[in-house]
Length: 404
Ligand SMILES: *Cc1c(COP(=O)(O)O)cnc(C)c1O
Image 1 (tube, helix red, strand yellow):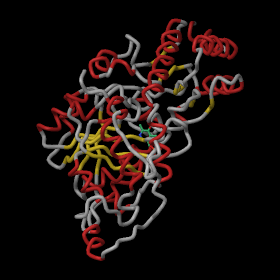
Image 2 (cartoon, protein in one colour):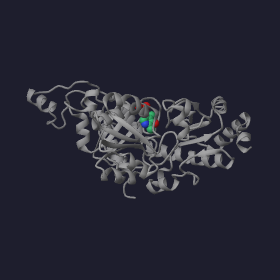
Image 3 (cartoon, helix red, strand yellow):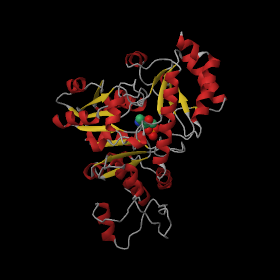
Image 4 (cartoon, helix red, strand yellow):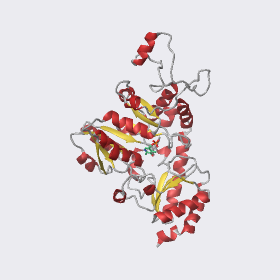
């Protein structure tokens, strides 16, 4: 494959103001002008390389924008103070009162809550459906539909969506395809398969150190300009602006993303295979038993693997809680939401990250009580980790239950 996102990141050469190997951090909210005329032109967006005010843009944020755009293979990008800041400003830029969204039903809980509870206050309605079935998606489209929304690999059930098929439907109906690629950076490049807009919560893998929340919208130059427009831009007017100090630190972490993704994927694949072998109900796109395995394989940049997320089902919420508490006690990871950390994180999505989704709907989409979501860490000796996890499972009786 000729498109390699990690090479694109590596090839970015930034010099600091004083020749530093890291670009200087722009520690200012406002910028001076030697002439009043240039200030006017900058405000109008006509003075390249000039900065006015840091909610509009800042050198540090533009560096990170550029790195993320080259990673996703889009013309431009716009960083935001959180993943939700990127998602909501993108959707509000595209939709007005009376418009409709067709969304995958298995999406991040916050996005689901926004579409279900908040957007209707602005007259924007959403139909949720099963995005693994193209005909179901196509049937949900009406004359008012503006966009299709999905996650490449969905949270928390790890459904894999056929991005090229969705892009084809979107084109045919003159819709935008918006894809949240948070779970599969580097592995999958949705824009290369026809997605119009690719969003990330940088909070997860891309930053990778669980020390900040951040987000990005990667899109055409035209759409990013729309987002930043001083009169009509959602990113400009709603103000989810990333701080320059943070964008500089995300940028530095991004330099090691490819190494981390390979290790996350290696460890997760090993654990998923072992978990399946000992009889646990395991969901991981790298397993042949996963319904989206071949599709993922067809779409992926193989060297980065199937990602670091997997789920197991241990039968009940009580068992799930007992197991997670014991694994934390034995230092195998943290009982915490979020993902992409160097250490393994685990949580029960039904009662945490997907709790915005009503219980009946959780059941319908296969989100069971006993589900544990793992974000597998960068453990050096994953065999040792597996043996320790297995003994936790034996001690809480999970393995016996699943064998019976
Ligand atoms: C975490 C997450 C978000 C929200 O991002 P924040 O940075 O927490 O605002 C959106 N989508 C997915 C898939 C996520 O995992």
